[in-house]
Length: 67
Image (tube, one colour):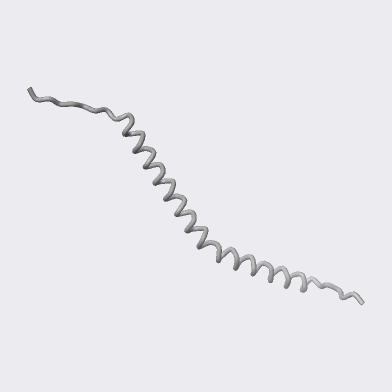
């Protein structure tokens, strides 16, 4: 009544599952790369704007007068 599960059956099912995982990973890599680039660009812009604000606060003003 019960069917015996052979080693070949287990290996075939494992390969099938592995193939699905590989396909999912490959399709997600493009989106992950774009998200990483966008995040890095956002951090760069934020650092620039914060540094610019701090520079305006602590900037030295030198006045030169001609006599």
